[in-house]
Image (cartoon, rainbow over all chains, first blue to last red; front, side):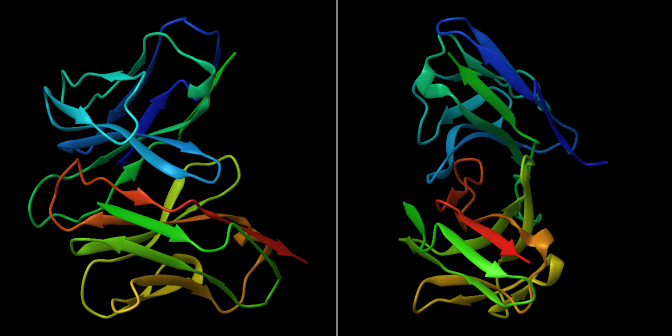
Amino acid sequence: EAQVTQNPRYLITVTGKKLTVTCSQNMNHEYMSWYRQDPGLGLRQIYYSMNVEVTDKGDVPEGYKVSRKEKRNFPLILESPSPNQTSLYFCASSSGTSGRVYEQYFGPGTRLTVT
Amino acid sequence: AQSVTQLDSQVPVFEEAPVELRCNYSSSVSVYLFWYVQYPNQGLQLLLKYLSGSTLVKGINGFEAEFNKSQTSFHLRKPSVHISDTAEYFCAVSGMIKAAGNKLTFGGGTRVLVKP
């Protein structure tokens, strides 16, 4: 089954304690992204990757890091989380191949609370 | 750059009544258009998309949307809603040129509450 998985699904942590949210896709997609969802703001892109070792900032990158060492994985790293990073996070993947269906596949979400 | 405005943050509607969710977008390039649904405590599910062709697009669960290029709108409709349609609905656009990882720009969402 084609899918994007994220772990953990729920996380409560304290300010300053480094954490990583993992994301993996099994569709051999070139493109992957992280979004955060906040009430009234919809989803906003944090970082994206066009392929292995190719990453770039999205609209709200401050306080986040990513890496893409393997095609299937795209972890999101919060080195020093702060309360304003409390949010619902989604990982997404899509094909970078010309002519392929132009659609993003989303993971189930990770609800993060930083106290 | 693109932006998306969903004109209603909340829409209460009675069961079996019709519903329309409004979406307007702004973009300097041609775009693809999407509607996603998020049921309570769940992830995002694609309802429908407009890539090209007929401006009336049919999606899952009886939803449809009409692309109006002159008005830069992509309103979502359903002729008769069910209790199970209670959810948050997001309109989104993506530039036709594959860039920024096929980035989607989302509207703020519309919460639909279906009342019995």
